[in-house]
Each structure stands twice: as structure tokens, then as C-alpha cells.
Amino acid sequence: MDLRKHLIAGNWKMNGTLDSINEILKIDQLCNGYEVDIALCVPNTIISKTNEAISHKKLVIGAQNCHHDESGAYTGDVSAKMLKDAGAKIIIVGHSERRQAYKETNEIVNKKAVSIIKSDLQTIICIGETEEEKNMGLTNKIVCTQLENSMPSISDENNTVIAYEPIWAIGTGRIPSIREIEVVHKELRSLVSKIKGKDIANKMRILYGGSVKANNAKDIFDLDDVDGALVGGASLNSEEFMGIINVC
Ligand code: PEP
Image (cartoon, rainbow, N blue to C red; front, side, top):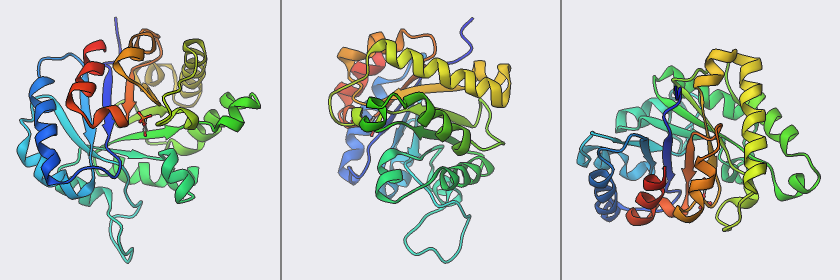
């Protein structure tokens, strides 16, 4: 029996205005009836309007980051509670673009994940190695350290999704070999098992992310320990995104 329903989550990054809701509505219509879970993490500025416009049959709307506190003197930031208020159901944390550009550490990512879970939302915790680390044979060590320190003690299979995203594969059109993806996902599941126990590990979803397209998705999704994908560029276009969902 398959213990894990696949999740295809799109990350729109800093793309999209109110006009883009039309593209989201196409996805919303086309994705009904699919077995997989489907989410789109859109810019904060369009969460509320998008949430009002979608059918709420299959597609859920999410965000890409939050502050770890609920409220306070943090100019320009938004909390998980505020994103929930706007209609977000799932929030990405620890994306490599934030880890690199904003120096977000595992400890900060962990705190953000706690705030999301305490707001009764789901979180997608991203981890991944640089190309240099991969070339030094450090992939497993790096991603396991990130996971161990970024995943809160209150995480379980219902509130947390892991996304393995090799940094060098994001937006580059390059992906690891299928065998490399398999090895990392196995390693991550066995670490979750060590930390959380076998039952949670068997049910927690571990996504792959990094240049997923309809034409490379099948081999990735065929892997036992891959439970879907976090999709950047290809999620901006309804046809491309649906192409991946079709494969899944
Ligand atoms: C991402 O940014 O999370 C991502 C996976 O991007 P892309 O699919 O464009 O590589």
C-alpha cells in the first residue's frame, strides 16, 4: 500500500501580479480529479485574491517564506499567522535562495517551521547541497545536517514535507542522475526514521526539486522514496505545470 500521496508544489518566486491569477485559474480547473496533492506557492501580494478566486476542490495556495515570530517590530516581514489569514495553507521555508541571499541558517529555518506548524499550516522544508559540496562528495553529509537541524521536534507527516533541492540544479536545466536522487532520498528517509521513528518516516513526503520538467519527471517520480516535486520555472505556465502533474 502506498503510504504517501504525491505532492506537486509550484514555487512562483518573485513572479506574478493580479493578472497572473488567470493562469492559476487554468491550473485550478485542469487539476481537478487528479490523485496527487497540488499546491502553488505564490507571492504574498496575490495570495488573498487567488484564494478567493480558486474552486477549493484540489489546488491549495501557499507562500514562500515567513517570519518566525507571530507579530512584532519586524518592518516588511509577515508571519505564518498573517499568511494563513490571507489564505495560505502551506509555506516553504529554507529555500536555497533565502539561505544564500538572506543568510538563513538551519536554526532560523527551524524556528520558521515551528511558527508555521503552530499556526496549523503545513511547511515544506528545503535542503540541498552546492555544486562544490557535491563535487567533494559531501552531499549526504550536508543534506542530513541541514535536515537534522532544520526540522523541528514537532514535525510529523501531516505538518511537514521535505524538499531535496540540489542548489546547482535549480533553474539550470541540470539534474542529478536518477541513481544520485535515489541515494539521497533513501538517506533522508532513513534519517527521518532515526529522528522520528519508522512510522512517521514511512508517511512523511520527501519531494525532489531542481529543473523538474514533464520530460524528466517520470524517472524521478518512479523512485520509491520520491513523493512528488517542488517546481520553480515550470510552475509559472499552466501547460508545463500540468505536464508534470500528468506524469505524476
Ligand atoms: C525551485 O526554485 O525551488 C526550483 C525547483 O526551481 P526550478 O524548478 O526552476 O529549477
